[in-house]
Image 1 (tube, rainbow, N blue to C red):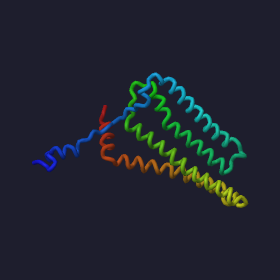
Image 2: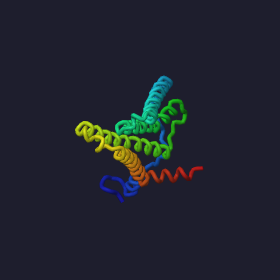
Image 3: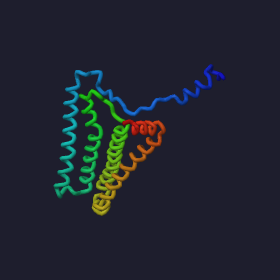
Image 4: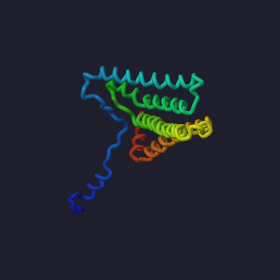
Length: 193
């Protein structure tokens, strides 16, 4: 039986169902410039180190200094913490791949990295919105700032940012896991010895 375009019904069915499922990904990165691996590793390691020291130092400073326990600094400390988490979600794997012979990343690693990156970035967005509201109240209603922006409201907004930041990647990863191709790949990975 031939269709109008000259292909048989079997060819059409095979084309519809012919797809390959991936269990792991090969991270190519900067493989076009192998002579720059050491330099890039040092540069990105330095950037990662400065980012972590700066953000975690800010968190510790805000925690230790009693005068900085105001809404603005609480939001800033949480933002620094989430920025550290964002760096931790991506950079270590990237640094590992500079000198790794086997640059493969399993589907599980990919899902976990995606989850933690989404968590950090979504929480960052909600914390920035809370910081914008805090600054809005401070500028537009300076005399009512301490009553409108209480410590209780600050903690509620921070907690809400973390909850929303956790719900979003759960939904995203849940939708990815509903994808038939992803679940088939995960089942095949589980069966491997």
